Amino acid sequence: MADSATLRFVDRGQAYPAKRAPGARAGDFDEISERFPVEQAADQAGRCSQCGVPYCAVHCPLHNHIPDWLRLTAEGRLREAYELSNLTSTMPEICGRICPQDRLCEGNCVIEFSGHGAVTIGSVEKFITDTAWDEGWVEPLEPGPARGQSVGVIGAGPAGLTAAEYLRRAGYEVHVYDRHDRAGGLLIYGIPGFKLEKHVVTRRTERLAAGGIAFHTGFEVGRDASLDALRERHDALLIATGVYKPRALKLEGAGRQGVVEALDYLIASNRRGFGDTLPPDAAALDAAHKHVVVVGGGDTAMDCVRTAVRQGAASVKCLYRRDRANMPGSQREVANAEEEGVEFVWLSAPAAFEGGDSVSHVRATRMRLGAPDATGRRSPEPEPDSDFAMPADLVIRALGFDAEDLPTLFEAPELGVTRWGTVRTDGKTMMTSLDGVFAAGDIVRGASLVVWAIRDGRDVADQMHQWLKARADAGNAKVAA
Image 1 (cartoon, rainbow, N blue to C red):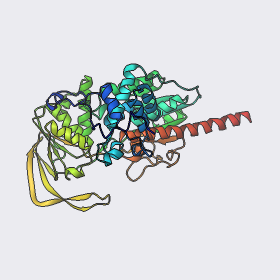
Image 2 (spheres, helix red, strand yellow):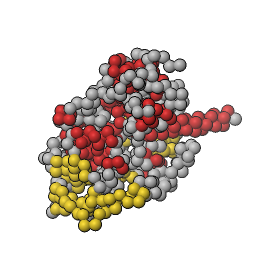
Image 3 (cartoon, rainbow, N blue to C red):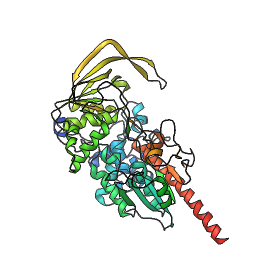
Image 4 (cartoon, rainbow, N blue to C red):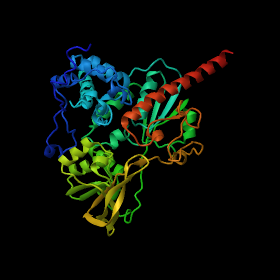
């Protein structure tokens, strides 16, 4: 039977860490939520009902031991809580910040179903590991006994970094290649600081580098080396590039100045945050004093509208073709954006981007929800004669991402891909069509969540280890014979 530190959801209400006031937080890129005080973290962790079948863990892609580290937190055993959390995740404090808990662990919390409000799992997860960093409990990465084999990882995002860490622990020499000048992938350049402050990511990558993982930044496969050249250099390769190709929006005026892609916009904003010098044409990627319209309804669109507010836009609107209930992005992010002054234009889709050389207006069409599509979501249909216009000096297209043409980019036409352009892998071994070349993360599953990328990185590291060990054993047997 659980002890008295838990099962307190009846007499303790649900609470999240305090958020800074909208007017204050909209003026900077610092995270909007404070950290739980120790007492409140224990209090909230103590609301866990300690289920025999913990749905929170079942619905976590990493199958984190959530009830167990909640109990340890409630008992004040924070170091043990951290160590247990760290067993299944390489980035628990990052997941605690950016996972859509309302759709995963917290959304499947049993006490949520009983009307008491879910345990605030993500906030406690963030608290545990931030405390561990502050207290010096996060230990250096210790490589295992050297195996004499080398692994190359293409992509320094969450999947690649997770696999690199596990493989380094197993004793492999690990080299990580990334096109950007900093490791972290979209954690660094695609997510704004108000959701994930950059030092939270850089302390992770610095720990990996200190553990002997070699980072080759500013390195493009196909430009600096072909895939075949990297195969010659390493005993095994992992492709973990993610998906960066923006989905097209083929409308009149889509090529006008001021119509930009979401990732270009977010990368420029994050670079400014690092103090980087940007080229003169990057002024087109600054929302200051502009009327901004963001097209899309996912988390990337929410990142863009909230960034535009912080850059001092004259107005910020989000144009989405479905209603609020059918929006794919986090409802918490929508609420945060509304608090910060973003206007949502529901059931509306762009029809054209009007103006001269530069965009000046978005012409849009009112939509209605019709019959469900193949996924069960109701398909939007245009309302007849319902066009309207809204001013726009900057239009940001945030419609999601597809895979780039890796066989061409990597000079590897024999690399198998699916009809969606994602890399084709064996469902069990996670190996591609090329012997010794594995793939994981969004480049295999399509644009998805950071937590799934971490899960894939963990799984592929195990598969690569098995393959490399078998190869080494076969080589040793041949020498012995």
